[in-house]
Image 1 (cartoon, rainbow, N blue to C red):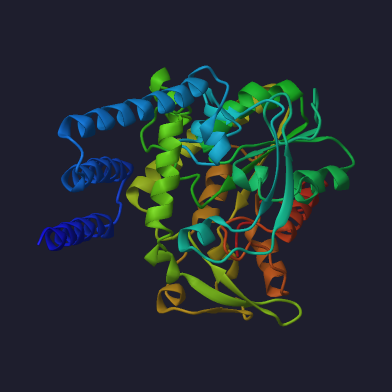
Image 2 (cartoon, one colour):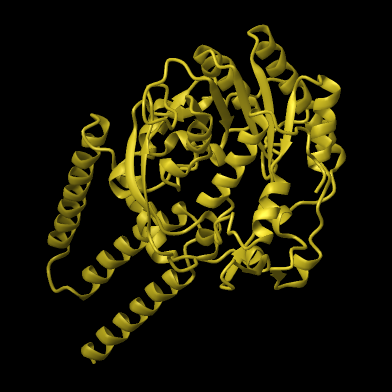
Length: 437
């Protein structure tokens, strides 16, 4: 009878634990609750089934719990003293850019790259691929090297004839350095070109980069790459200085991001939860035929639509930012060029060698943002030069050139080359203010 009761208790216990974990893990707090509950339930089952005296079981529970606390505390002490950064060790990401490996806080910019930071790795999956849990691609090696200011330049530059400002489209941490448009420009112009792009930056931060870093390089030309996918939407409609991400996090919170406990919990949560594909992006795809007739499945991310009243207010904020950029550049006799970087959908929509695979893709509208930006710059000053990179990228794509990574929002090496050639043509005296598709 006792054996039956024991097995019945064990069955009920294991079933309860299974139900506990089968509910899934929706957050880190949920995972912590499950781990603590599982630990206490395990000791409860042990106490129920064991023939040892209750005082002995109580002593073992206290001793094991204290040992666990001491071991965890010792490991965390290594992080407090700075001997170990568990976030870097486990390769987990932070909530904010400045929580990630290779970044530091900046009171005005919010975050920036570490000076002389270096990283070698392989690009195997794009940002859309991560969201959709797609299989890994063939590894593409990259070697990231940053200068003394924290920008992606192989050498420390004190002066540069041309400076390119922007976000991840300029920095392009997924590509090797010789593929970047700044490298292409340097080779074609046969002069020094500084890459001042940082992933995640918006126009507010890029204006700070222009004033703090670009002007110090005493360039003859500043090229500001405006990416339509998020640059406009990073602006607050109100006329206020939001260039910096407020640094309101306490020091203990900064330590928490690199602590053993947090990063072990993140790894555990990922192992329990697994990868969950984002359902929205599955509907945004189409097939592309390259120059050799090969078929490539392209995935899309940014949703373009008609400009809303709040977007018009953001455009006014952009106007004030570019006005200030123009004035500070003109004071030093610097040529200002704004290059419009389109989203993948704007480049591929309507091409004969691209076929949307869903009704949503076929009905996906475009707006007139390139013309809006060109018109805005024209009213500011005819001295501000503008180039829409959509036409050259569309022309290349129509010829079968893969200009965007299939499972990512960014350019391929060929896309960087096309953009670099177009900007070079402008800087060398070609036509400007091309905005019509």
